[in-house]
Length: 162
Image 1 (tube, rainbow, N blue to C red):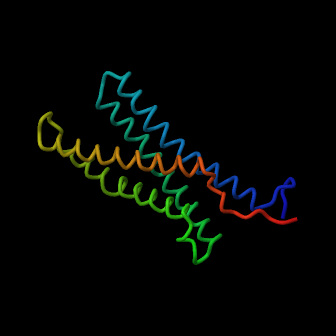
Image 2: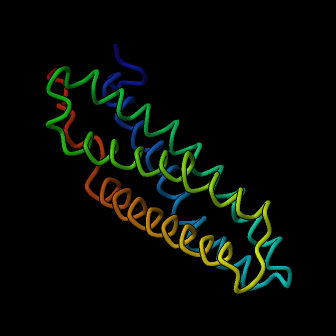
Image 3: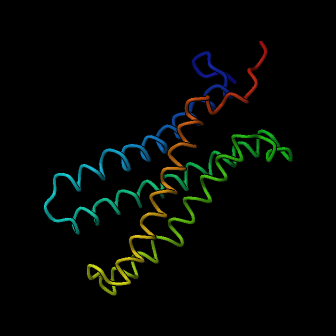
């Protein structure tokens, strides 16, 4: 079936690329533009941190939704050999990193904030370690996502013959 002379496979490939770009663009904008700007321009560092945390949480949920959709798409396209597809491996790794952040690191950081973070305390040091780990996961996901966008996510899709 063609829509406006464009095949369904081509539409789907385009939708995958747009969704991936939304996710990866969100990672880059949140991590390397918005968060640093909040801390640079706001006097209240706690408020800046809460706002940045909310933005990262939103980008994480977008990532979980988009990543799951992309992975399922690859599985449908490739069948039982999906795990041989490098795109699938990268998307799966990105999903695992997001899940680790949302499911493990963020709850631990929130618990420490509830206890209270006195400068120089063990809780503050533990929070800094967790924050550093979350930052590393974000960097890895940003780079993996950039690679997927730059190499053309749908590159493995065969074009339909006329």
